[in-house]
Image 1 (cartoon, rainbow, N blue to C red):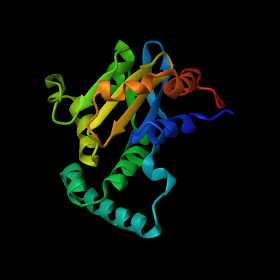
Image 2 (cartoon, one colour; image 1 turned 30 degrees about the horizontal axis):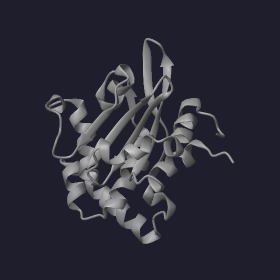
Image 3 (cartoon, rainbow, N blue to C red; image 1 turned 30 degrees about the vertical axis):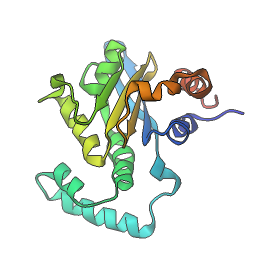
Amino acid sequence: MGFVLGDALKRLCVEIGWSYAVFWRAVGLQEQRYLIWEDGFCGRMHGGLSGFEAMDLLIKEKGLLRGSRCEERFAELGCPTEVRIYTLVHKRMTSQVHAVGDGVIGKAASTGNHQWILKGNLNPEYAATKDLVEINQQLLAGIQTIAVIPVLPQGVLQLGSTQMLSISEISHVFAPTSILRVANCLVSLKTEC
């Protein structure tokens, strides 16, 4: 029984416990490569927003557009974390384009090295860079652990959790029974895996 890329990302959240999973697909020529949002999943998707929640979120977002410190005010609104993560994944990330070599996502694609980012334990190299903006958006949404895993040459897998996770705590993720089929789907980027 096959599954599509979205189902593979959903499995990372539902079966393994990530709050969201996004796959950034590499596009462009060798000298000018970019990473664009291919597909994503967050736990909020399965329930969707109710009409009242959607209206409330829209009103709050419209108010934010007039402010100068939008990101800080967004976190202060008191929106539930799952709504903030849904907005992060399905509104902000979908329109992002990352140049290979720039930012957290782009650096993972250019170096082939994964990034493991924990709230409260940020690498000093992120200070005053575009990396910090990317990371802060997620921290303000309630994400505490960010994993950026290159799946070369196809793209980059980005995972986020509202829990503080160390690599050793999720070593079971790399077991053949849990991640192998998901990784094969991401590497092949087939419609059906």
